[in-house]
Length: 243
Image (cartoon, rainbow, N blue to C red; front, side, top):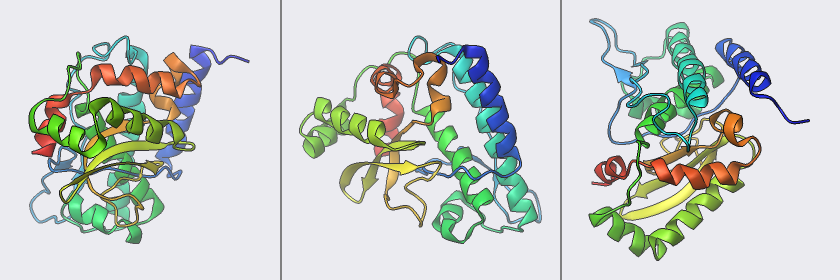
C-alpha cells in the first residue's frame, strides 16, 4: 500500500521521539570548518554541538527537495541529534574539546554520544552542501575531479553508485585523503572522520540517503532523489573545502 504524506510525517515524528531517548542512529562526516561547535563556557572543557541556521528557506531547493521534507528534516531529525548528543556529553562527562578529538575517539564513545554526535555534525555539513541553483565544479576542483575519476560525469556516476548501493540508512561521501580524492559511503550517521569508520578522509561533499531525507517526495525511488540532488549541490562550498 502506498504511504500517504500524513502517514509518513507521523512516522517521522515518532522516529524522532524514539531518537530523543537514545535509540542508536550512527554518524559520519567532519571537515575543515566546524559549524557544529560552540565555544565552551568559562571553566568548561567539553565540546557542545549546535545547529547552524539553515542557509536558505525550506522551499528554496524545490523541486529537488520539497519544503515539507526540509522542515521536518531540519526541525525534528537534526534538532533531536543536537539535543541528544549534548545530553550524552553532560551525562557521560565527555571532555573532548573539539569535533576533531570527539570523532577521533568515536570508538570510545557510547552509542548515544557517537550516533547523535554524527547526526549533529553530518547534517550541519549537509545543509551547506546545497544551495538553490547548482552550476558546475570549476577551477582546481574540476581539474582534480577530472584527474581522479576521468571526467565530471564519471565522478557523478561513481558517487551515485555509492549512494544508491548503501544498504539501509547512511551517507555517500567525496573525501580528500592526502593528495587523493575518494568516493565511499558510511552506515547510519557514521562519518569519515571517525576512528571507527572503514572509510576515512576529510569530507568535501556528503549526501544523506536516510529515507527521512527523501521519502515524502520520492518514496522508495532513492536513485531519482540522488539524480535530482545534483541540481542543488553547492560547488562553491565544495571548492572552499577542497582548497
